[in-house]
Image 1 (tube, helix red, strand yellow):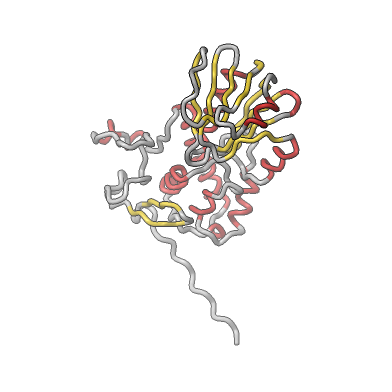
Image 2: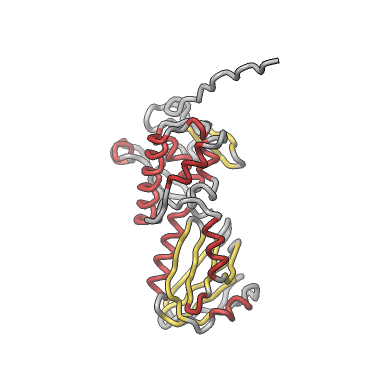
Amino acid sequence: MPEGHTIHRLAMRHRELFAGRRVSASSPQGRFTAGAALIDGRVLRDTEAYGKHLLHHYEGGRVVHVHLGLYGKFTDGELPVPDPVGQIRMRLTGSDHWLDLRGPTACEVLDPGAVDALRDRLGADPLRDDADPAPAYGRVRASTKPLFALLLDQSIVAGCGLIYANEVLFRAGLSPETPGNTVDPAVWTAVWEDLRALMKEGVARGRIDTVHTRHTPEAMRRAPRVDRHGGEVYVYRRPGQPCLVCGTEVARGPMAGRNLYWCPACQPAVTRPPKRPRKP
């Protein structure tokens, strides 16, 4: 599933191609025909990303909400518009460019109230300048769940996905099993600021790179990482390989229904205090 930086890049791309222009909308597949009719011929005012959700704001208060999920994908190009190929849920055509959407989890037209409700159920997005990390920390501090699981909870941190959650915890030297209620404010601030910086770099570069300069392939004289996700990382999808920092074998295990990766030496296990016996 695309992480938040990808959705922000898409919002920027769609703004560049269509904002301020009148667009034609259709649904070659047929599953968005009614929604397309509501925005067809309207001006796209602006685009917005919030976590993993993409919003197209049209004149008249209509908003198209897209969540790509696991299989969703956008393609675009210059006119003329090609013949439809595959299951195109939504097609937009402007004065110079076309845009196709295939396979999203959600593609719907919302009114302003529904958009507000969507925002209300999402946590702080590190890529938004209006993000407030304080409420997110409040929920982290009130939970006994592992920090890894809390970072993946979109109602706490919107846009943070599997790669960023694994990598930011490694960079902080924190065990993924660290209970949220043991994270002090300074640690949370450091994790938030690092996550924000990493995701902003992802927007700028179009890929996820999390290693420090001294651990790049050039600096370490090692082969670049070969993976369909691209980018240089410390632990994500590197089980059994040596940690780039200490050489310990990277471990893998399940948590929160996802694949967790960590270095047992750089991210030592949390020692939990013994439970107090209950009084008879």
